[in-house]
Length: 97
Image (tube, rainbow, N blue to C red; front, side, top):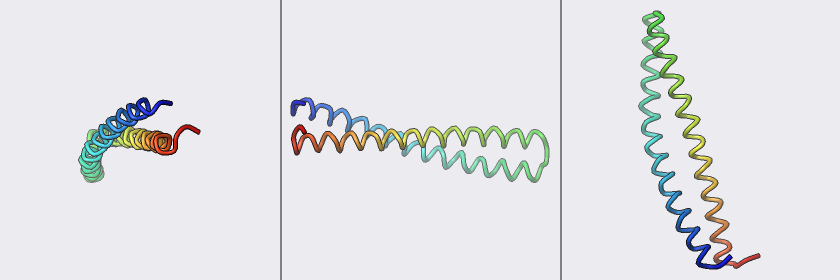
């Protein structure tokens, strides 16, 4: 692979990595808020013991579960991008195998 191609892929990968890390930071903030909401609705459901309160808690819990899955997918994507970046850097410094 030519040096310019590797450099271009490194640049593209770096941009994707920066975006993914930024998305992860936003998702982490949102997850904190949803986690607080889940705790609040859980307490309300326990105290109120009504179907409406239980349903509200279930909805927030499902939302939180979906966000946790999205976060894990994003963490996996970041890990993959970091590995690709490492491979490209190795090719750039060592040369083709």
